[in-house]
Image 1 (cartoon, rainbow, N blue to C red):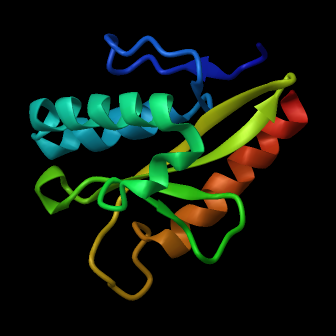
Image 2 (image 1 turned 120 degrees about the horizontal axis):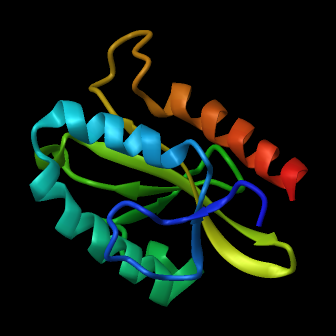
Length: 139
């Protein structure tokens, strides 16, 4: 399956529907290692992964966990509140090698609207779209 990966982190999630870009796990680990809130985050992350795995494109019905990004046609965001460092995970739904998947593309810590902040949707969306393009070229 080229360089796409199953969700590796947390280890206990074992779904087949959700895949990740090859750099995604490093993004997420980097955020959590710096945060000091790793233990608090994992339970909520696993809940959202299970919900996404079960509900698939209907996940956005749970609007406090998922949102359809209005400025793009293909991207969605998995949401974690400020207690979890305001982490955002950008993802999409794709058909990859003739199979439907959710693809986790980019994790970042959203900061308050600071002008030019490298931690914002404005900066994160282009990274996610570039990664989606890489996946589709690779597949």
